[in-house]
Image (cartoon, rainbow, N blue to C red):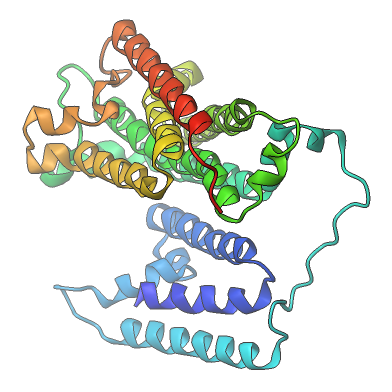
Length: 361
C-alpha cells in the first residue's frame, strides 16, 4: 500500500512537472519529508507519525491486532491520487507540465565555459536536494541516540546488527554501524553523478562537446572529479547533522571530530564504487547497472551480515568491509591507502577504455 501511495504521488508530479528530472525531484522530496516526519514521530510522539504516509500502514499492527482500516485508508488515498493524475494527463498539453519551467539565462555564466562547470550545472538541483536529504538522514539517525541504550538492550535481534566490541557502549557501536549505512546512501548521488556521463552520451549530447576542443580525458575527468566532491559533501553533511542531533539528545556529548572521523573514513570505499562506474563507462557502458547491483550487495552483507552470520569472505567482497569501524576499532591507514590506490588504478583503466572506444548515441 505504501508503494501504491508513492506511485500515485509520482504520477501526479509527472503531470505537474515538465521533465522527468523534476518529477523525480518532487517525488523524492515528498519521500524524504515523509521519512523525516516518521523518524521524529517514532521517537517523540506517535501522533506525529500519522502525518507521514510511511506511518499509516503501521497502524494496522500486523500480527498483533490486524486492523484493516489503515490499509484501506492508504489504498483510497492512493486511488484518489492516481485518478487525479489521469485527469490532469487528459487536460494538459503533451510535452509540458502545469508547473512552468523557468526560462534559462540569455547568456551562459563563466561556470559553463568548462566541462566541469557544465556537469555541475546539469546536476545542480539534484545535488542540492541530495545534500538536504543527507542532512535530514543524519539528523534523523542522530535524534534517536538518546534512547539507544534502552532500545537495543531490550531487543536481541537489534543487538546482532551491531558489531561486537567489548568495552564500548551501545551508542559507540551504533555509531560505527550507522556510519557505514550512511556512507552507502551517500554513494548513491556520487554514482548518479558519474553515470550522468553515460546518460549524456545516450542522449547524443556528448558528441557536441567532443567534436570541439574538449578531450575525452577532460570530459570524463570532470564527471569523476565532481563525483569525488559529492562523496565528501554528502558524507560530511550527514556526519555533521548526525553529530549535532545526537549531542542534542545525549547527556554526555561526543566530540564532533569523532563523528567526522567515523564518517569520512569510508571515502576510499565510496571511491571504489565511483571508479568501478568509470571503468564500466569506459569499456562497457551497457553494463553500468552492475555498479548499482554491487552497491546493493554491499548494503545487504554489511548491514545484515551480523544478523545472518555470513562467512567472513562474503562480507570481504565489499570494500566497505575493509574500512575500520571507528570509534570501536583502531584506524588502519594501510587498508585505507590500499583502497585509495586501487581506486586510482581502476579509474586509470576506465580512462584508457573511454579514450579508445566509440562514442555511441
